[in-house]
Image 1 (cartoon, helix red, strand yellow):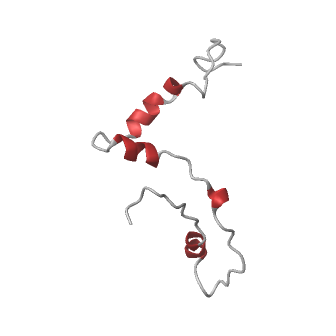
Image 2 (cartoon, rainbow, N blue to C red):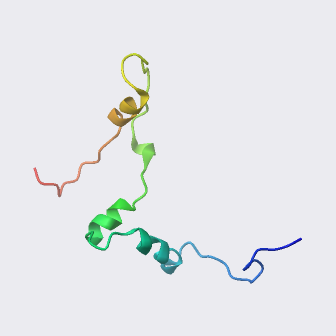
Length: 81
């Protein structure tokens, strides 16, 4: 049985270590994007906060539109009014 290169070398990946994924993140960031914007774009989406889509009439709206309408947008007190 053959093993792939690096297997059995004893090295493990620690997902809690910030440097573990730094290279992957750096590759996906736009050099001109503000750091705060780039960080916000990499935040995981939390769909459990959305309202469930119930009683969807297929003739009334496409499923994707109904799901978008059910999205809960958190209130950000720092937003300009």
